[in-house]
Length: 108
Image (cartoon, rainbow, N blue to C red; front, side, top):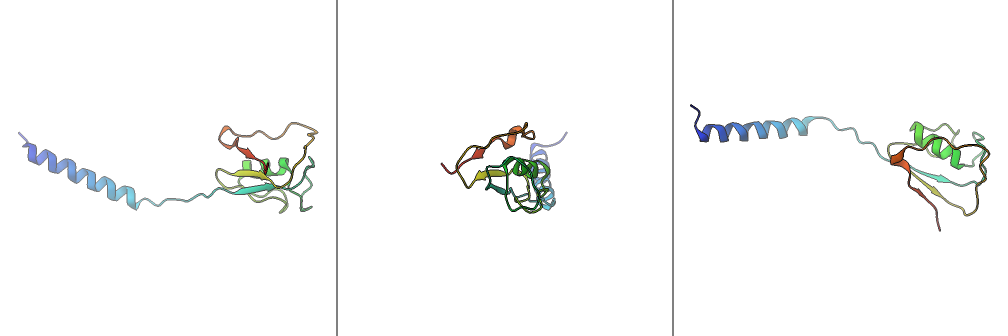
C-alpha cells in the first residue's frame, strides 16, 4: 500500500514536470493589426492609396494585404478605425465580418 507521503511527492513531481513542459512549448505570438479606413468610397481599387471599409474588412479577414498597400495587412484580432467622418454608401453587401471582429471604431 502506498503511503500518503509518497502520493503527495508523486503529485508534486507530476505538477513540476507539467509546468516545465508547458514552459518549453514554443508560443507563436500573433499581434493584432490596426487598419485605418481613410476613404468614404465603397469601391476596392487596389493601389490607389485609399483604404476603404471593404478593403479593410477583406484584409482583416485574410490576415494579409490584398489592397495593394492601401490598407494595413490583417493579423490576428484586428481593429478597424476611421480617420474621417461621413457616410459610406454601399453598392453591395460588405464581406462577412466574423463575430470576434465586430468592434468598429470611429473618431467621433
